[in-house]
Image (cartoon, rainbow, N blue to C red):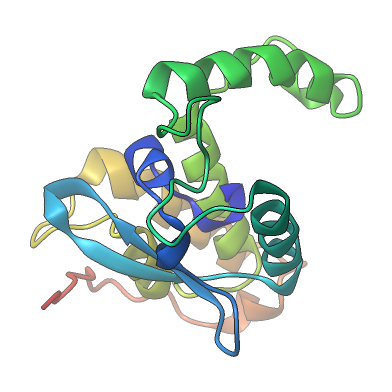
Length: 173
């Protein structure tokens, strides 16, 4: 679920019936401020989730990531797992050595990967519900600056596109 940029609260709150794995595969998340958002799933993620669900044999209202007792994992459990597996991952990805990696860092990594793949910043903001009626500059500016750097790069296909001075404000229902 790292590719979807889920918050910890969204991840631990997922139930099996929040996953839609057919055509137009997506996950329905219930996030901050009781906002509901729909995020598409990649084919690779769909395969992993299908395998996981088959292994778990859970009901529709069961948590997708349960404890041994069948209750949802806690925030602390997720952070603990990150602390255990980041050193393991750093063996094959040396850039992780010495870095502080949190679940929120992974959320920002998902946003940056979408940006690098050419996804428009307004779409990223909607998928991750990063903006309210007025986006906070401290949250959005690193992404906007990265977008500008990518557009100005001579190795980028979008280098000839002008940079719009307008600011995006989401209009959510």
